[in-house]
Length: 313
Image 1 (tube, rainbow, N blue to C red):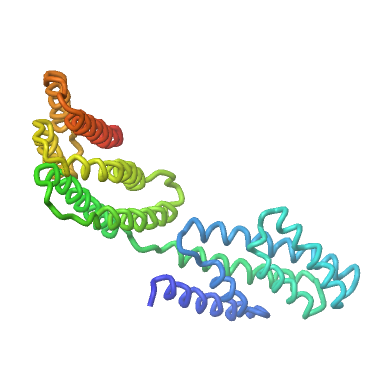
Image 2: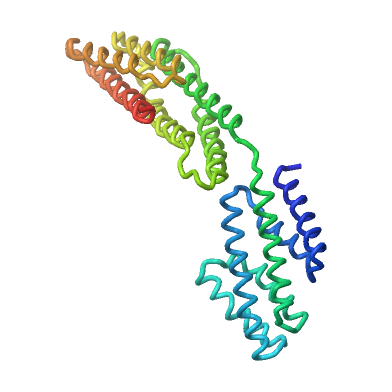
């Protein structure tokens, strides 16, 4: 049984109990309002409550005026609904249509828009929306779940970079690249959870975990682009010194995925670039292509580290 289901059940029962204490007519509808207002997050619940409250209030005022002027009959009700729906859409509160129409039908049923009946409906609305806001103010913490996702992401990144390193050293190595797909799924799931966490804090507009996940998404795109080039370079039997050097850099980065310090890795890449400048020009087309691809991998892994460095800063 879900957390949201439990809150909905408690809220519905509480709303009916309060409505019965006040001896309200149609009091059970307060429970329906609670059920319709409870959303996944505090922010969504608040938006839902606002729209349903103002739509219902508008239907009480306009509906009462129409019924008192033109009579309580089906034709007036039909014409009112036809005119009322565009008003809700114009005011961007169409989500409150159902609650507002039910409230209107209460007035239509008793066939009298006096102060007592209007206050009765207003109390029902206030009880329903108030209880929904109260019970949904209690939200589970996503902290442990977010930490687990971040740990899983870092582990997958570490495996990917380790495989890059191993491929550059051993061309016959077998790797299906499933971690690239798995980590993308984890990132999407983690983002959904973090968005819920942000929306459960009404006054907080930013979340460092969300920025962290965006950073990992950008880094994953780089790793995906590098995969094919790593395969091309590793498939060559040509002995190029820079291949082993870059493999060692990948290995070092794979061992420190969870670290915020990119200083050592960036320094290694600078030394790697310097070694390229000092090396003789390639003598064959194959050597030229391999070294060009290695230079590309160097460029991309540097971008990978810079993205992290900028976020940490």
